[in-house]
Structures are given as structure tokens and as C-alpha cells.
Length: 205
Image (cartoon, rainbow, N blue to C red):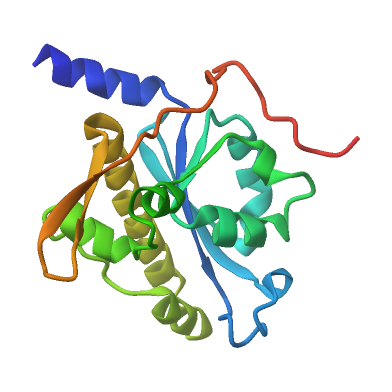
């Protein structure tokens, strides 16, 4: 009981932030040009508050100060998708904020990329995504903003649970070509000691 309470306390003291984005358009619609992507929703989970929050494109100005105070940003395929698209809106350099891209660790451990959904089903007892990015784009065009927020926050929650499992157990699971659920090692320890009093000053001067 004490260990469980201690773990919850440590989580809440952390300023790590798990995040995910949804876009208004697809790769085909932007001709694979990352600078043409437009954000519909960014959702985050803040360990400091224990709450999920979502921000529309017009609300991103409220998000930046939160990210700048983070110990670390945690995402899935975020280095090559989420952060470059968010960078289209941010005047500084988001890559200067400490960052964990879980997919990079998956590829380093297995030599292949896995979809978040496949990793979740193998690691988290068949937890499954409720939709996909293309559905979120259709919802945007239909004006179903609440559906996008709900879906994006679910992705954040799945990413959070995978992060916590990998951090605590130093392994995740995947389904092999033969259908076997197989473990592989991961290490989510920060490369450098995180400074909890630091503000990530990424703006140009």
C-alpha cells in the first residue's frame, strides 16, 4: 500500500507532460509537406495536476507556457510528426524541451516501427484505440470537435499507460509474426537529470 501511494505521489510531483495532436488535413492533402499541416486539437496529460486538457488551433497560445515549464514531453512518433507540426505555430524551438519519443525506443529495441494500437494491445491487455487519424480529420470537416478531443485524449491516455508500464517494468510487449506476445527491453530514464525548477527558454532573442 505504501509503495502504491509513493508511486502516485511521485507521479503528481512530476512536471512531465504526455501529448498528442490531431490535424485538419492528411499527408495526401498537404503533398507530404509538414509545413502545410494544420492542427485541429492538441491534447495533454499533466502529471503535476493529474488532468487531461485539450487545446484547439486558436487556443495554442495557452499551451506554450505549459510546455515550456515541463520536465519532459512524452509522445509517440512525436519527434517526426507531432513536434514538427506544432513547430509551425510555435515561435521558438520545441525540440529544445526535454523529450521522450516512445516510438524511437520501440524501433531501437526491435528494429521496426509499431503502431501505437499494436503496442497497446500487446502490452496493456488488449487496450484498443477507438478511431484513427483519418477519422479525426473527417470529424474536423464535420465540425465534431468534441469527438476529436475525446479521441485525442484517449490516445494520450494510452501513450501515458505505455510510458508508465515501460518506465516501471523496463520492457514492453509486441505480437510477433507468429502471434506470440513477446517482451522487449526499453529504458525511459532521462538522458540527463531533469531540473524541476527550470523553464525551457526556447524563444529566439
